[in-house]
Amino acid sequence: MTSPAPVIAPAKRIYKDDITRPERWETWLPKKGDILICTPSKCGTTWTQIMLAMLIHGGAELPMKLPVLSPWVDADLGVPASEVAAALAAQTGRRVIKTHTSADGFQKALRRRPHALSSPPRRTVAGCQGSPLA
Image 1 (cartoon, rainbow, N blue to C red):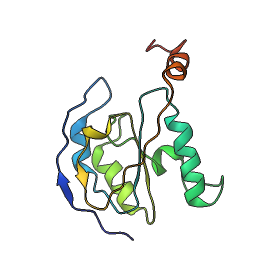
Image 2 (cartoon, rainbow, N blue to C red):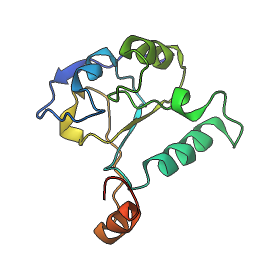
Image 3 (cartoon, rainbow, N blue to C red):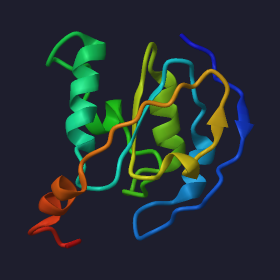
């Protein structure tokens, strides 16, 4: 099991909407090896989550459902933040964490290397076609 990485700087910005609750980041203890998927909505977040989870766990047979294995920490989807944090803390090895919050919206931790994914703007617009957000 990897130890929590010390937090060295607070979030620079606060992002809040109908689902996102920035205070939920306070329950997350970053660990060395954590992979944060920080992408705007409709830019391949879930697709990236499943690929990374399959790579980490050696195939398509994952030990638990994707939303439990790779939670959206700052989303208030009816699961208390403490339960999400406990489920993450129980995981050993590398963890994949989902967010639609920009990287400046959560605390910086020592020994955490950010991993970024971006999508061309045309793809983002195309992905929103037919979406209630469009």
